[in-house]
Length: 118
Image (cartoon, rainbow, N blue to C red):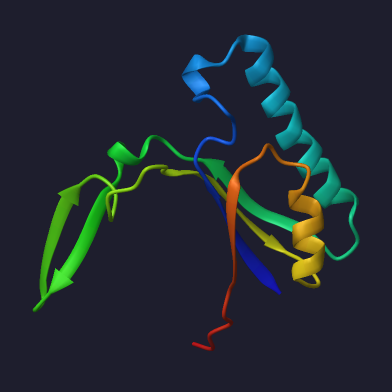
């Protein structure tokens, strides 16, 4: 099954720009550990993953009555924006949760995807 993992906030007690270089390097090492843990785990494949820019950089697209409207900023006012995402394939949710424990302390949403036949 595929899972979309959403990393909320910046995964640290202080924002990324306020962290020392050592703190940033320690956080990046955790992402490397997560990648290695996924590669080492049978039945797990990391399909995609990226860090995201600040939520203020987002664009929202809405279609109403056939008209497309674009607005700047996140979909809703948020205290913490999304810091990044992963898309991975894993046997079950327990495996995903076990692997995610390696990451910095983000609030994390895990969404199973739905297979749609086209």
